[in-house]
Length: 280
Image (tube, rainbow, N blue to C red):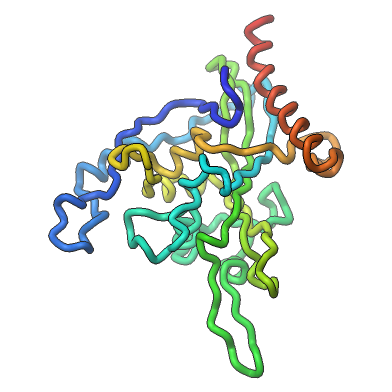
């Protein structure tokens, strides 16, 4: 790990994929996005399973919680397109992918935000109450309002940095993903809230099927899973596991510069561990 924690990747991915599958062969617009057999096979082959890690091989580890702010330009591939009706298949935001697969029950490992350790699992109806809201006004049920891509402002992630003594290197494992977005039950709709935790390993194959838009070369795209696992985003640490009950930085540092410096200190501690290992 020679670069900033934000951009470091534990391993590299094959970048070859398909931007708008079958667009040059489609006889009608509905055929855009339909992959042929070879394309499907290539996508399946490029999916990398997480390696099995024996606890005895972990020399050192630290669990960190980070926030990915979707207002930052480098994170735009996770945010756009914010209009969910613009594209049918070939371009989706991360939230649209998550919501579609939650509604069709492909994603089921969801947990209440009040517990960061995935101990408080949500039912399907619990989740629907978070992403869709309707109320009774003067005896009439209002149409349901659903959270849209434009309503999502950030993602929180939980992951573990660990030194694998068998491989002799520092690695990162993404464990959880939490959307942060509009509170539909808030009257003015201006307050964002943590929605729910998703156990990340359970959604990797879902995210692997969806491609991230590449504004440099639309013919060369990676999957959402590849983007997240290889940490191709900007984030800041807001909490780490610690003896004080995993208290957040904001609980012991003033907002602003003090919190930023503490976040950078934690990053440096992680970076320095690997450096120190080789200097001993």
